[in-house]
Length: 296
Image (cartoon, rainbow, N blue to C red):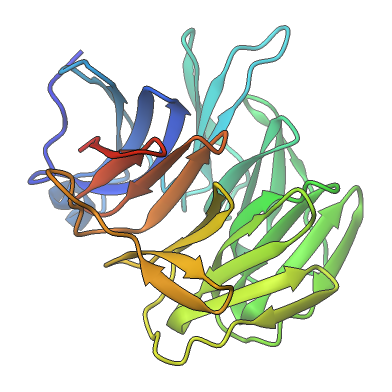
């Protein structure tokens, strides 16, 4: 155990909620990053404890997924990054291996109980075992992929460059018309198949996979990086603010009060619709439906 990582020394890359009282953060040391040395600090916060778990991996981790336990496997944390490497952590072991040589990865998510990672050239790979990945890539999709989420009616969705949204189910892939050429960086879908995606220049796409349209937000020019549905409301993050979608066609700022007032934003995560995590370059805060707790 160790002291909490200092935001003065580290920049936060992303984070995931492990349970209502525990959050994992991926951080970088700007000095090491400037030297172009692959490195990621892993910090685990637990509510009520001053000391943190602190570990590290020798590659750049920029996205993480929490994989639930099954009969012969405990809960796992899967970390991927632009080097093509993947680290898998549980209470018994930490292992690092290559997902796919000469491919960069931008995002990983838990899809139907296992990790699926996406990246350049339409690369889609599912983790079968710690060092075994199955290639799900399809020639119908060759764009850079930036985001992935489950599609509850079946399969999963990806988003990426040139306004791409695509639905994967089994061996089939269907590209979805979005009416946008923006880079789409985040995507989410509810149980009824209602999709929201976000991206460059204030872009938010909404609809079903057969009918997606851009929401007109004429006064918004910020790039959006992450989008989630939390307690029935769509939340979206830029680098400088956290917003909620209001009346389906406008945004309102999420307000912070008291001692927890983040000034940086980027990545959002939701745990069982009870908790919302916001991570920015220098801030991490957890919302439990009634109030915010500063993680870092």
